[in-house]
Amino acid sequence: MDRRTLLGGGVAVVAAGGVGYWALNRESAAPVTQINAATTEGDTEAAEAVDTSSIQEMVLGDPDAPVTFMEYASFTCPHCANFHNGPFQKLKSEYIDTGKVKMVYRDVFFDRFGLWASMIARCDPNRFFGISSMLYEQQKEWLAGNEPAAIADNLRKIGKVAGLSDEQIETCLADEEKATTLVSWFEQNAAADEVTSTPTLFIDGVKHSNMNWDDLKKLIDEALAG
Image 1: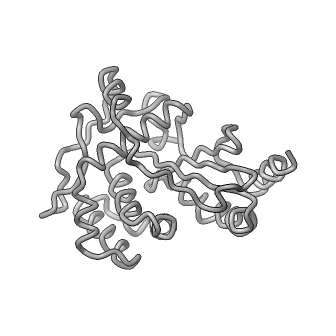
Image 2: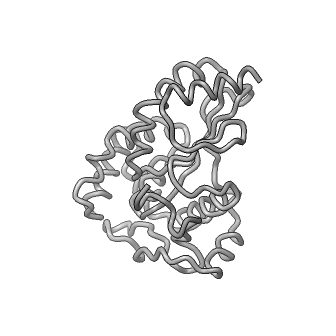
Image 3: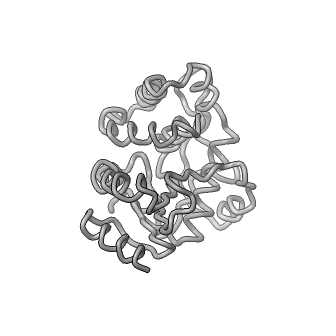
């Protein structure tokens, strides 16, 4: 899916091994360093060497649900927004909220804006899925203009509406170590699961590409029938 496909048909190493960390300065909306999306063997090895155990897996629904649905998605991916504003809503109401399906959400980062959005969403893990919904519902608005300073301010506003304090927001956006670890976590996961585009969906470990609700419902029902 055009620029939303991971670079080179594989995992794009976007911030590892000193390449660039994309965190925000506490005093301004400017990134600490610029993006460098070049993929090198050294960068990949550096990403694999990072300890990502501090990153929390985001899970929605009953942890003991009989079927596990996992999604790899980016907050800046329009197809991901369409999925979350459409099929996901039915999946949540009919299967996740009823205890039939557990959802695991995994971040994909194509750009610094997606990383900043994730850092806002993850600022309070208890608010993650609520903020995620806001990010997808308002994706066109907060990304409008493609200007880093404006986008950072838009994300701050979403965080405040979601109940985050100014101090929480600035601390999260300025957390360079967290940004580095998040990107390495994404790279490790995407390489292990051979994720090359978004959204990529897994139902009980079986990989699928983006799909409409009817097709997704059929696969979920088949998995439940077991």
